[in-house]
Image (cartoon, rainbow, N blue to C red; front, top):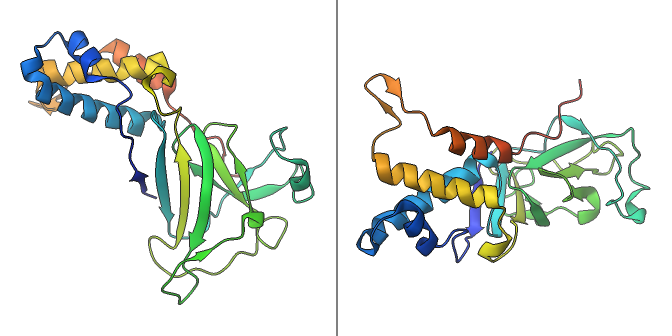
Length: 225
């Protein structure tokens, strides 16, 4: 299920000036350092499942989710939504693998046989932006989300538009994520070699692996058997 950026960030979560100081390179190599820094930011976001500077995303799915993850009612669920579900309800749940989730703008779908998108009524789904990763749980016309519109057989039959990120400035980004970007960019700049060479894989530095693993978002919704 691909996630694409629909509105990219207009700044990097780590400034080029800071990266140049970290890499200890001259400004004459700034274009190469910037390239590696951009690649490092993309790699860190992809591995951790986190969005640093707030961006707009689109998640495309072949259909409605099939697994029914446990949906525990929390204090973030508004009072008027309590009538839809209870703490023992298993709803069809789709995780949005970019954290922190800010908001879900829309859920759209291609109805069976249709060539234009329809928009699902917001009353047919719940949004959990308080946990990591954020989730959408589909209520549909049945309590367990069992009745949702039939969709066309296509890779982008269901499309969820959402925004995720810590904010619009470098200062709000967690230090571990910024450090991981710097370490990754420095590693790319220094080695300039493939990750797999001569039959042996090239290990990332331990401190970088630790930063990445400590910030990685794991699945929140195991499938209910």
